[in-house]
Amino acid sequence: MDIGTNNQAITQLTSQGYNLAVGLLARREHSVTELRSKLCAKLASKQDSQHQSLTTAVNTIIEKLLDDGYLSDQRFAEAYARARCRKGFGADRIKMELVEKGIDASLIEIALAPLEDQWCDHVLSTWQKKFGMPPVDYHQKAKQQSFLRYRGYRNQDIDYLFRELDSILQNQC
Image 1 (cartoon, rainbow, N blue to C red):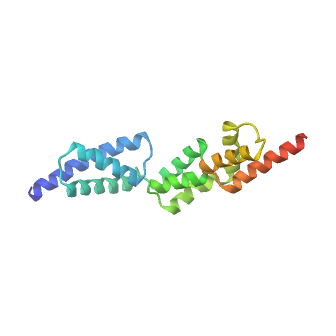
Image 2 (image 1 turned 60 degrees about the vertical axis):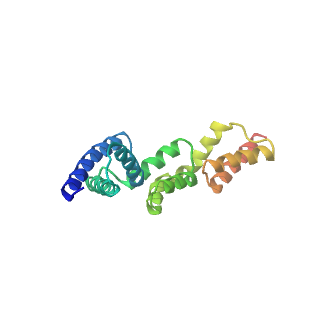
Image 3 (image 1 turned 135 degrees about the vertical axis):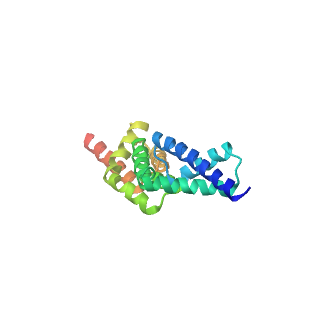
C-alpha cells in the first residue's frame, strides 16, 4: 500500500469513525478509554485496514472530539457518579467502577464531591429498599452491613445508619 492510498484510508476511517462517535455520544456520555475501545472494535470490523492506520484514525477522532467539546472524561465521570448514586451504589463502588473505565483519580474526586453530603441519605434509602426492618440479631446485622459494603458504602456511613436505627429503636421502647 503506498502513502497516498494509506492517507486516503486514514481519512475515510476518520470520517466514518467521527460520525460513529458522535452518534454514540448523542446517546450517552462515554469516557475516552471506553469510546476508543468501541471505535477500534467497530472500525476494525468495517474496514480491512492496517492496524497503524486504524490507530491513527481513532487517535485523530478522539483528539477532534476532545477539541470540539463532545468528549469529556470529567463530564462522563460526573454523569456516571450521579446515575450510579441514584441506583443505590456508594462512593467506594462508584470510584472503583470509574477507575476500571479509565478515569483519572483527580476527576473521580471532582465527580464525587457534590455527592459527599448525601451518602448518609442514600445508604438509608438503599437499606430501606432492600431490608426495611432493623436487624433482630447479630447475624442479620452482619448480613445487612455486608450488603451495604458490597454496594460500595463506606463504613462510616453504614455505622451512622445503624446508630440511627438503634436510636429509633431506643426511643420506641
